[in-house]
Image 1 (tube, rainbow, N blue to C red):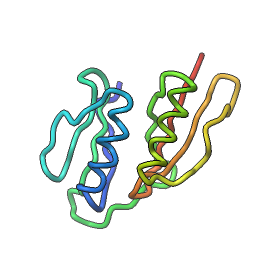
Image 2 (image 1 turned 180 degrees about the horizontal axis):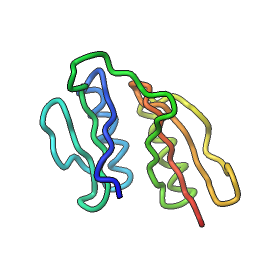
Image 3 (image 1 turned 60 degrees about the horizontal axis):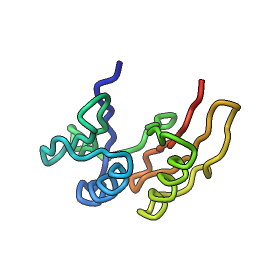
Length: 122
């Protein structure tokens, strides 16, 4: 249903280092790097792109916007959360069961974008 999701950054070099290391944990790599925008994926499914905003105005995370990255398991969620924190992300909610079918951990990346690492059994 989704092709890609784009989030803004103030500093491509810093954001690239963060997402290169973080997304490697789920087998994703940079599929396309055009300087001001960089697309990550596994070659199948939805991609995540980081970019300097096209209008060249200040990047700002949207209130209520969030990127959700599947962890594959509860252990995977814990691993991604720990890796993101190691890379400088700030805590928005440690991994835990949020409802009977949903286990998630939340961080904000270096630009303040909210990320959820999750495992859902429906």
